[in-house]
Image 1 (cartoon, rainbow, N blue to C red):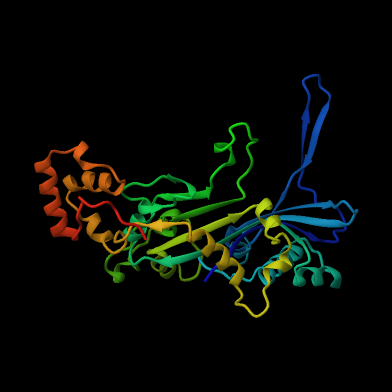
Image 2 (image 1 turned 30 degrees about the vertical axis):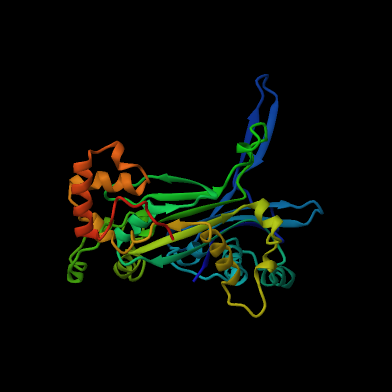
Length: 346
């Protein structure tokens, strides 16, 4: 199920006094006053999670509150799972913020929140999928291709998952003189357990209780309920995220929260639709997921030819005919994989 992961927007909020979190002042070289900016205030949520807020007036002079943060994490202390229904999730978050400020929302404010009558400038949606093992998650992130998108991989290694970043191809490639603009959306695909820094699970579940070292659970809050079970649950999960920025939201009519509610459809309909649209542009190496554990157990001498073959390289440029023939027979025996054929994608 898709969930809402990050929100940036502006809501009606009848604050009595401007929220004071300090300000940043700049000065010109001659000592004259430059730009002055109000600082954002951090509001504490569950288990150390925070959101940022800033009070101001809009163009019509009405009092508003700008907010930015992860509502799921703010309300429950983690974002391993959540809901895809944006309006009630945000309403609960706004009520908690108001309570922390000692502010009682008026009926007009509350009605605006519950009806989605406010603007959005960024929304992140995500979903998690089970791959069967952490090795399969890491292999998946190594084998993703997206011919119609810009793709780059960050990190990765023996004990860490690669993060795959996706976005639309830049217009500057077609016109080098075009002004550089922020991407309309950015996608990320990565292993959630590796992102949290959770150590590999013990093979024997009985050993979990014996682990006294709190760092075993990585960045998960130490006081979170069912911490060991959450670590076990997330171990084989790959997370797919899509960050939707201001321009994308405006172009698709999603810059008002009310637009995220589709009558007669499941609560996460809009979020799942946006994720599926991105995933349609992604292809995955066929067989890599099913054979991830076998690939991880390949002899050291076979890793290099496998990685070259997976990248689409011509092995004849690196090895002699006799070596390629020997490698081919070994891959056929171990993985039922013919390295003389080009990789297939699905």
